[in-house]
Amino acid sequence: MTRPGSGLGQLGLWLHLRGRRTDAASLPAIPAGTGPALVVHTAPDAARAAPQIIACLTRARAGLRLLRLDADGGADDPVVAAQLLDQARPRAVLLLGSDLPPALIAAATARRVPVILAECRLSAADLGWGLQALMRRQLLSQMEAILLTDMPSLTIARRMSLPEGRLSMTGPVSEIREPLRCSETERASMAQQMNGRHAWFAACLPQAEEEAVLSAHQAALRRSHRALLIIAPADPTRMDALARDIEAQGLTVARRSEDEDFGDEIQVLLTDGPTEMGLWYRLAPVSFMGGTLSGESDAMRHPFEPAALGSAIVHGPQTGPHATEWQQLSGAQAARQVRHAEDLALAVTELTQPETIATLASNAWTVSTGGADVALRIATRVAETLERPERQPA
Image (cartoon, rainbow, N blue to C red; front, side):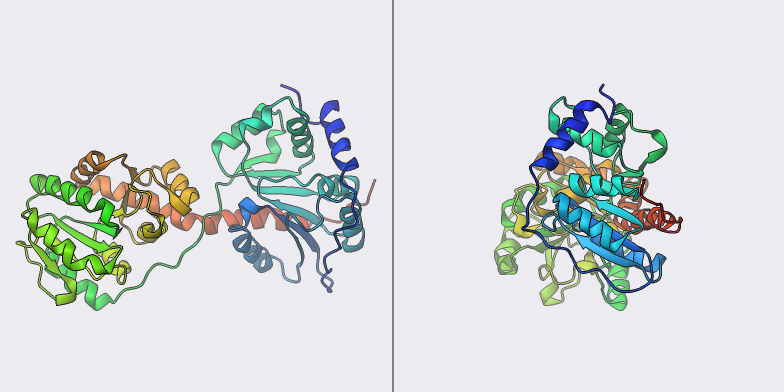
């Protein structure tokens, strides 16, 4: 493996910078004040993580002066990058995401301004022999610290022979979501009615998946005759037709809209649609996330909703707009993925053991709340650099 900082990598960087001189970009405003300046460049893949990290930074260091750049903010213009660093005299540069703006990194290196890379994912392409890959390795070799999101990225960084002391795996900064609310009085009353029954929840269920869910519940009833299925239809206008379909399968149904009781003789509780999701996630130890079997993205709820409320998650192979979150849950063994209707039936029947449910739910809760810890780790590492005496240019 070619070591980072090789001659070919330096050549690739020189050629890149040579072709990037332009007068199109302008300098961002430099905040007034006496606190240390920090240049923050945010790549598109870190846009959601940046607010949490920046919030932690501003809490950790009073008077911090932030200069924020994005992919179009002149960070890859050698003239603009040099002028920005000369005028702002930042104590450090923080790069968020997997993009490596060559002009900004080169200007910071020339001025001995430490560069910290966080929320970064590396790929197998970074180990290639083309000039682009060699240039990225050259740029990575100039980082003071590289905070990676996952173990595969850490493995790739080690294969590049980057200094071990500069590498750490923080995990990703996951989106923090406030837990959905519900009436505690209502929850306690309904929990009493359920009387210890095993319940599972089909969240925002589209019509295309109704048959699969009802078949899975038939299997669950063969395992536990008191099992209860709670359905929140994605389309509330499907309520009457869905109730008829449930009864046609020989299942007894109660409707939330009619305020009907659901004693042991009721096998399916049909809710008013996606209006009381916080209540159902709290009541059901297991939640199946609608839309993930059929790929109907309009029906898909955020997977951290049940995760934050202690419900074990079952989902199909379609991730829709939440691919990153599903990947995080999968990596932490915090959700059960099913491929088709038969898999769903098997998963629902298996997830009746309290220990299995508790493990999934606990892992999911850790993932859904872990973003705050990761953001704090990144902010702490940056704050330590900001406290060091300013380096003089070589």
